[in-house]
Image (cartoon, rainbow, N blue to C red; front, side, top):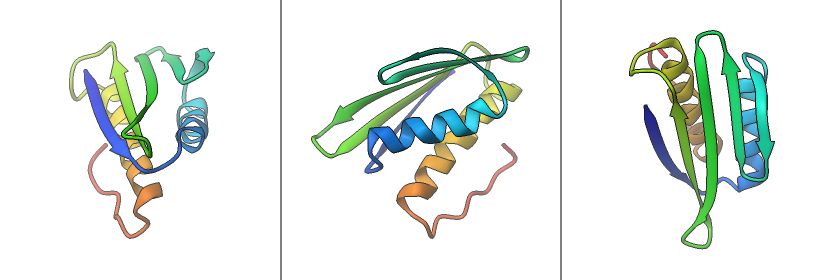
Length: 96
């Protein structure tokens, strides 16, 4: 599965959030520039970031699993935490 999110949160802050969020749960396989890959027995998550529109960060989170797998749920939860960084009033809800 592949998910996209555009946020005003700077790239360095999103990378730090990814390292904290996935690093606590999974093993870091690749950490190059704006790209991260994390692996767990349940699957692999890839995070790619790029600048979009000058002041936005385009976040792409991809998994090697089908939708609603445990790794897929982690990917969606991570995007929710990034959204919370941009909008503190956002309430993170959901079963993922």
